[in-house]
Amino acid sequence: MVLPRLTWILLIPCLLGSAFSHATLEERPSFGILYTVWVKPDEKSATVKVRLSRRAEWMHEMQMTIDPGRHTGFLSSGELLVEDARVTWRPPDEDAWMQYDVALESKRRSGRYDGYVTDDWALLRADDLVPPFRSDFEDLTQSKAKLEFHLPEGWSVETRYPRYSSGRFKVDDPDRWVDRPTGWLIMGDIGTRRETIGHTRIAVSAPKGQGVDRMDVLAFLRWTVPTLQEIFPEFPERLLLVSADDPMWRGALSGPDSLFVHADRPMISGNGTSTFVHELVHVAMSAQGGEKADWIVEGLAEYYSLDVLRRSGTISEERYEQAHARLAEWGADVTELEVDRSHGPITAKAVGVLREIDAEIQAGSGGSHSLDDVVQALAAEDGPVTRERFDELVDEATRAAL
Image (tube, rainbow, N blue to C red; front, side):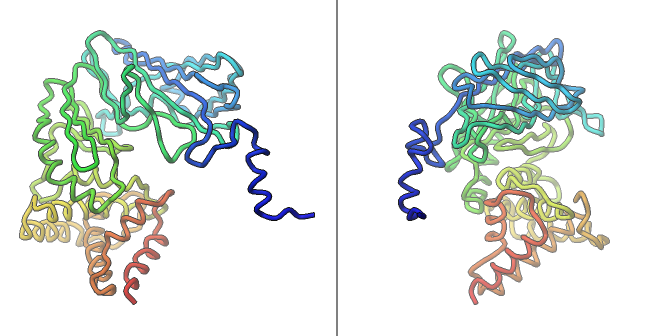
């Protein structure tokens, strides 16, 4: 006999057992993870311990992808297998922990750093402390994760996460069932200024004596973030902006709910664009370009860096048009957008193409839709941005009023 669908629905809580009887997708039973970091600036390294603090038996296996040159000295309870760039940990049901050492500094091809440590401060990505991992865990459960630091005397730390009264940080990523720390962090003898803008709590932090005008940056964000929040309704509730001078990389890099901008980067460049807003668009979209589609992601970031400045009144219409004219001139000789990495003239050319697409959408929809609708849809989706999906969304927006 085939049971009616309603009968199966009523049976599900019994089949799952009492631990899951009231669980929903948002309220799954949880196991605990505590990430503990001991920072050793004199060695330019840290020791990281991953401990299953509650219901360890629900975690069956963790496979971590490491950089063997940076992540070393693995120890654990339970079973541990280290093979080149992969570490497999099968924790025991009690006293479950894994520990390893991390070299904190990382250098780019230019010879400058995107992870750096001095006697007084350190700036790096939390992603480097806890590399990406895949896990096998009990069905219909999720993690509740915390992050704590043991720092040299006099040091403090800023992350993108909310802080408990205990000093630990709440690590929570709605897109993951098992959370790990990500995004930029800064620690040491640092100065931080905070502001709430709209629904976003913002912290601007930098080592002392690095020439970073934190209040000027906050003032600039007060001009621009409200417009970003209008374009991206899901703009992060928390944002950390970190900065430092040489020998850090002389550019800007976005991360989850966070970004790094070199201390010498102007808030608005001479050509009318903004590195700050460009990276904030990346933060808001949280998207990567698929194969040959990097021009879309980079082009949108640069296009909206200009449009946000115009819409917020930060630059005039005249300066806005001048900036577009300069970008059009820079990208004039570009004949192919679909390359592996968009940069310089290619991104400049992409801005012009996107402006034309925006005009076509507005004309086709009778002014009821724009490129905003496309970028909002892309920001809400998971996975890499592809040319095919971009074209679909443009077509939908253009025909929306038909």
